[in-house]
Image (cartoon, rainbow, N blue to C red; front, side):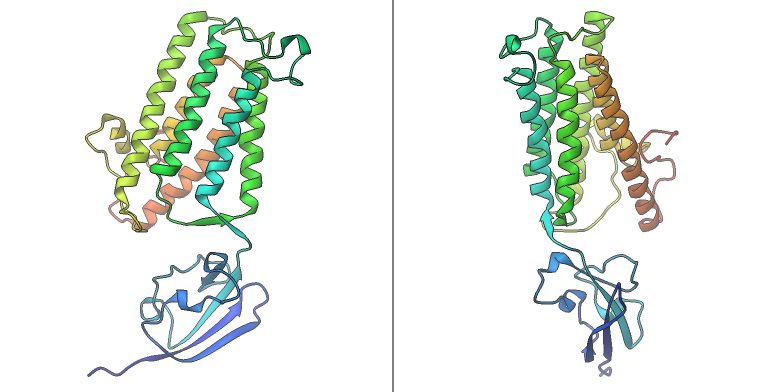
Length: 305
C-alpha cells in the first residue's frame, strides 16, 4: 500500500499577505473549494497560488497543483457578485424599451406637437424592427442558448454595462426617430443592401452561439476547440477564433449603412474596439490551452486582426 501524503496548507490575504488560516495534515485529494470561508458565499471568493494570478477551479485538488507538501494559497474577496443571466437580461431589456420610447415619440422627448406621431420614412420603421429583433434575439439567447463558464460577475459591472447599452440606445434612437431625420443618400438600394447584411449577420451570429453551446454539455465547464459544423454560417471558424464577434460587427455595420446615422457608426466603432479586445484575449487563451489549435485563425477579422 502506498503511504498517505499529508500537506500543510497556509492561506494568506492576497493584498496584505496577512496569515488568515493554517491547516495541518491535509489529505492530497483536498480540493480548493474546501478553502472557502463560510461567512461569504463561494462566488465572492477567489483562492489562487499567486496573489495576482488566476483563481483556482473548484475541482482543483492539492496533488495535481504545482505545490510542495507545504502549500501557500492566497485569498481575495471579489466583492458583491451578480449572475451573468441577470446582467444580460437587464442590459438588453433597456435598449429594447428605450428605443421603442423614442420610436413612439412619447412626451418630453421631442416638441409637444410630435407626441405619439409616426415618421413618414419607411426606413425608420424598418430600423425599429431590426433594432428590436436584435435585442429580443439577445434576450432569448441568454435564456435558452448561452451556457456560462462562470456563474457570476462583480455587481459593479451591471451599472457599467447598462450605462453603455442604455446610453447608446437612447443616443441612436433620438436621431433615427427624430422628426427632422433624413433617409440614406442612396435611398432604397442602400437600405435593401443594409438589410441583407444585417439579417445575414444576425443568422450567422445565432449559428455561432448554437455551435458554441453544443461544445459544452449542460452543467459542464469543459472547453473544446470550436470547429465548423454542417451549418455554412459556422465555416468562418476556419479563419476566425471568435466569429460571433465578427457577425456582431457585421450586423452593426449593416445597421449603420441602413440608418446613415453618426451615433450608430460611433456605437459600432466602440463595440468593435471592445470586441477586438475580447477576441484577442480568447484567441490567446485558445493558443495557450490547445497545442493543436489551428494556426490559420485570426481573433476577429480573417488575415487582418
